[in-house]
Structures are given as C-alpha cells and as structure tokens.
Image 1 (cartoon, helix red, strand yellow):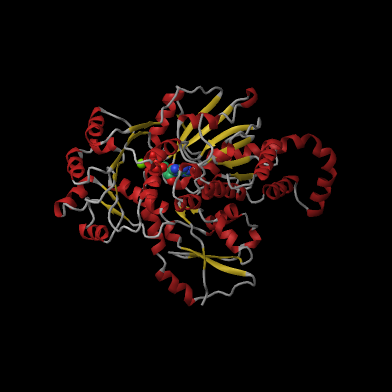
Image 2: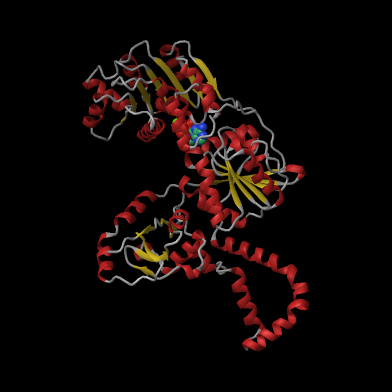
Length: 559
Ligand code: ADP
Ligand code: MG
C-alpha cells in the first residue's frame, strides 16, 4: 500500500523548504521521495531506481538544499544530467524549492551557451551547479579547481548519461571532486556499466527501489490519450462531452491543479468541485456527500484528499496527471467499477511519461489502448444525443399539458409549429453550438504532440505595436460599466469575432448581452466586457485558447 502519513514535514526537511513546497502545492511525498529523502539527509551514498515521472528531482533536491550552507559562497552540490533540457529542468526545480532560502544560488552549465557567464556565476558563489558532463569537463580544463569544494554529487538519469557516451567525462569529473563527498545515483535501469560505476565511486550505497508489484485490475475499461501538459484542461473538457458518465473523479498532482481544473469545469457548466488537503475535513465530507447524492458530478482531487472515497455512482476515473507508480494507478482506478458496475479509466500521458505507461501495462498485465481527442463531429453527435435523451421522455405528456398553449402561441405569433419549436430549442439550448460549423469553431484545434507551439505563442505576443497605433487613431466610445480588453490574436491568426465571442461565452460563462462590441484587427482584437467581475472573468479565461492559440485577454487601458 502507499505509504506513510506525516507528509513532507515528517521527513526532517528544512522549514524553509517545507514553506516552498506548500507554495508549489505538493501535498505529500511520492514513494521515491519518502524513501530517498531520509537516506540522503542522513548523508549516505545511495542508488535510487525509479521510472520517469516519479518525482526523482525533488527526491534529491529537497534533502540537498536542506544540507546546503547558504552562508558559504562556493559550489557545494553538483547535479549531472544527460541533456541540456534536463539540466535546465533540474536547475529550475532547485530554484523553485529554494525560493524561501535567501542566498542560495543555482547555475546551469551546459553546451551551446557561452562559457564565460557560467564560470562567472560559479565564481560568484553559486552553491548548486547543474551540469551536463561534456560542458563541465570543458570548464575543468580551464580551471581544475571548479569542483574542489563539492560535498554532494548526484548523477541523474545515469543510464541515459552512459548511453550518450559520457563515461570518460564522468571519470574526469569524479577525479576533480573531494573523496569525502556524498554521492547519489539515480537511474531507471541498472545495467552492468552503472553497477560498475557505483562500485568504484560510491561508498556503501543504500539501495532505494520502487518495486513494481503485480496488480490486479478488474472490470475497468482503460484507455490513454497522448497530450501536451498545457493542453490537459482543454482535453478533459472535450473528453467529457463524449464520455457517458454518471459521476467522475479526476486525479491531479497539486492543490493548485485541483482548483484550476475544477474552476474550468464549473465554467463549462459541470457540477464540479476541488478536493485537496487544504480543504477542512468537514468540508471534504460535504463534497463527498454531494458527489454521492448527485449535487456534484465531478470531483477533482489529489491522491491524499481522495483517500477512502467510496462512491458507487462513480463511473469514470480520469488520471489527468500521471500517478507516481502502478500501485497508485490501480488504487485510483479502483474508485470506479464499485458495486459490480462497469467502470472506465482514462489516463492522460505527456510525451516524457510514455515509459510509465508501459510500466503500468506490464504490472497490471493489461493493455491500456490509445484514444484520440474527439473531433467536432463526435462532439456534435454527443450533444445531440444528450438533447434527444433529455427531450424524448417529455414528448409523451407534453402535448396533453401544453398542446393548447402551443396552438395559442402559434396563432398569436402567426408562425408554424416548426418555427415555434425551433425557437424553443434555441432558448432551451442557450447558445450551445449544435451544428458542425459552430462546433468546429468553438473547438480550437489542439496542436498535436510534437508541434512547435511555443514559438507561435510568442510571435503572437510580440505582434501588437503597429496595430496599437491604428487603434489609438480611432477610439470608440465605451458603454457605461464596460471596459475594453485586448488580445494579441487577430485576423492573421485566423480569428473572427464569432470565435472570440464563442470562447468568452463558453469559458467565461457570460450571457451574450454582457459582451459589447468586438473589434478584430490584423494583429490584435478588442472586446468590451463588464467591468464588474472583470478579474474573475479574466481568471476564468486565463487558459483559453482560440484557433489553437493562447487568448491571453488583458484589460486594455484607454488614453
Ligand atoms: P522524474 O525526475 O522522476 O522523471 P520529476 O522530478 O521531473 O520526475 O517530477 C515529475 C513531475 O511531478 C514534476 O512536474 C514535479 O513538479 C511533480 N512532482 C514531483 N513531486 C511531487 C509531489 N510530491 N507532489 C506533487 N507533484 C510532484
Ligand atoms: Mg528526472
């Protein structure tokens, strides 16, 4: 079973680090963290074996930051990572976890960037160096003393480093550090070459391994969807349209993520709530009761907060963030399929988590097939099906009770019953897109995994200047109580007023009347929105994308 109760506080970490963890919203240590942190804090050498995505960075960063002396302005910790990307990720993580530790500095050292600034940062007293082996050896060639004060070494993803041919570089680096240092090695696999390194350079290392025990999963239909992390909310809302669920529990890793996803789903009209460790026990019980009796249909929870939930109505489990190990996966999806019912479990997988998916399949002995995001046609079909099933039961009785009224209204208005029925449908569906073209417009295409999204977003941001000038030349009078908001998306991004309107209606939950004039220009657009509640509205629209691009709507200061 997963684990210990005391959370991070029980592990003996520095109080400032606990404060930083609260700020990032981690609720409890992952299995590798709860096992490795005490060993590293105690000063032992260690070999840690765990898959990608299990939280290894914090497993070494948290205890090592606890051991740093910020007053000493010299390198104390060295992390070696196989690639520039991983080195930067680890450096960023160190920065995040040390936010409350003034005086701690981190430098990333990798190839492809000038050496001068890196060396300068080291000399200016960075206590933590995160480096790729090749570039670090270049630095050693210039200054053989760079690593002479290192007290803690971590080889992160050691197997990958060896695959990339860094064996000789590692030997050079080992020789340049004091022998009295603590050495920690993390690897997903332990081939002979890694064991040999450990034998030669580690002293009586303790082994920490997250063993994957075989698990049984029954009566639960499982599937996964490949997706970029920043598209998860979008993907979840789209999947919900086509999944026929009664009650659903969505699992995420952090408290903040419970709030963000629950808010996004509420904005879409779902009865959703967040459940995390910050929420008081009696309030948590209320949430679970509401899920039981149907006042809520969706709960977005962290693993800790979801412990012990037993609600037979749950037909679906969405693993929005990857669980840390197969055991926790099995535990999570066991929330459905209760009381002999069929259950369905969906797992969102980001590109770097593919391996964890394989481990889950191996351990459970089941294939977790791939599904794709539903397309506009499927979303439309699902909407019409829902509409049909909500109206069908009314047809039998409604004519008896409302038939005369219908006759009177058609006569008064002077229209056909078909025209009146259409008007009633329009009213009942409240602006929801129910034809293919409209659904296509409101479902911005999610860039497929691997597409270069970031650059496009940044281009969009930079686009404003010339347009801003044009817009100043022709200021438009504003209605009382409305303010103008601006986005850097315009016609050249493929935006039309309909898209913008659709996005704001859908995600913002505003009535059509509340939205004023919309002006679409080449490189930006303006829209008039109610001043009252503007911050909340912009908050809801924070992650909205239109035509595949981030909307990033901001209040536009006139004058
Ligand atoms: P690994 O190095 O094992 O591949 P990472 O250290 O990169 O995994 O962590 C994967 C993700 O999990 C990161 O986004 C990280 O912020 C998050 N994470 C790590 N530990 C926790 C935790 N205890 N609670 C919530 N999220 C966590
Ligand atoms: Mg890692």
